[in-house]
Length: 308
Ligand SMILES: [Zn+2]
Image (cartoon, rainbow, N blue to C red; front, side, top):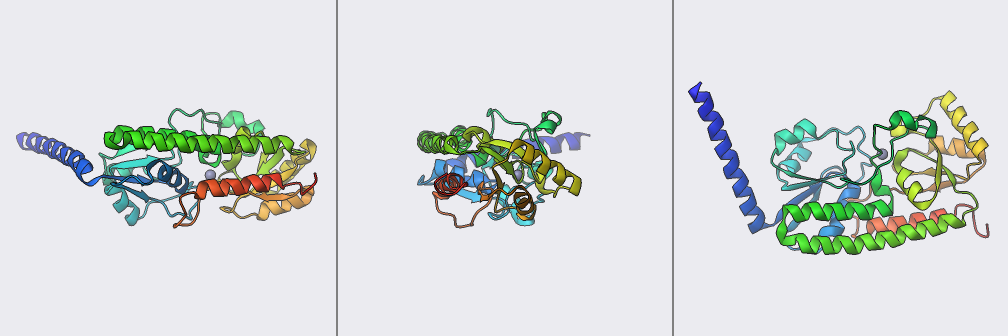
């Protein structure tokens, strides 16, 4: 019994020593920040760019897209083990982390980028079943520039708490980038106001925040969480889209556009390729998020062709 108690005591002491060593190394060698997903990594880059001593790493593959069914690899576990700070999307997007993270790095500081941001329900096919989804938050804040700015402010605050030396720089850079994102979000709203029809069908729940913030109305969602709709669900969605007079079907590069193409053809409306920046190239330039969103803006502006 004494031996067990002694062991527990030793473990506590070791933990305290390791923690103190961690703080010391954080001051001396800088800070190792790991971000779970591609969009959160891109936003965190804006907050920390140019700051000496910050090592930033992306956990999941850049080309993965939404990690709705992801399982960690041994390489992921190594990245987690070496992190001082882990920046997460939150809102259930990292269900794969739980126990493996506690095992790999129980002392890591977790910064939840979505903390305190008002969320939408993660609806499945259309507004009717939103009520059933009310308990589940939609995790795709990153796909709306307005929300991306808020994520940056949250990330800066989290990093500022973890590393006081860089607090001022993180907050300044996040403020500046959030202002750019707010202006861009205003541009989206202005473009959507001019569209002859603001009603869309989306591939999965990824555009709910972008749509709400820009003034688009999502009439239906084709593939909630990547699962293809059955024949009767398709018929119901097409019928609903006809009744509501949907103007366009959005597709995203992260998912197959097969179902969307069929639906758009049925409805006789255009397809619009909109990239939510859920994934991207591993060597994406610093302004990647903004550049892709500006391209999305031009695609939305051109949905109905010139002169309409
Ligand atoms: Zn998703």
